[in-house]
Image 1 (tube, rainbow, N blue to C red):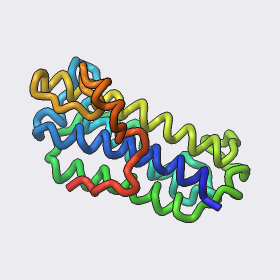
Image 2: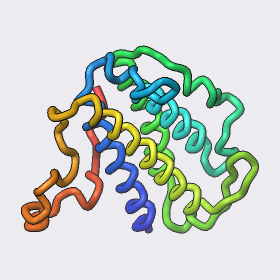
Image 3: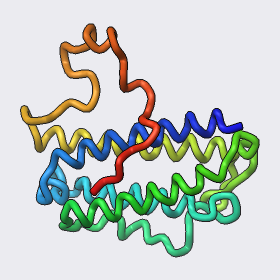
Length: 182
């Protein structure tokens, strides 16, 4: 049975879709520019999310989630990227995550995995992954809204739109599939 795994995957897909809708609203310069000195750009956050997903979910059940080959500090180096470069990097992390989730079923949720030598259940590790990803996607949305200003296209219920939305809620569940970022 995969009911709980599918629910967790749905949340990952929802945040992936929100981030991609955010990224699509920006130009290359905006993707690479932080809002303030010392802050993270969207490109930096993409590099970090991707590094985290690849590290945590490569050989998920058999190796520590913080891989020796990951250079986390380099994920936070300022970089200029194109949409295409950013999309390639972004998709790498999600591909690893979804390949791993496809191999899991609910019976494996109580197994133990480690991250930085600290044990947790598969369930806890997956929930931590969703929380980590959603935290950074929220940062991406804030950055993009500042850049877009009044040109921002709302990803959820727009201000003043609650009554209309409640007549036909459509974003409560993540999409079953998310179109790859191109």
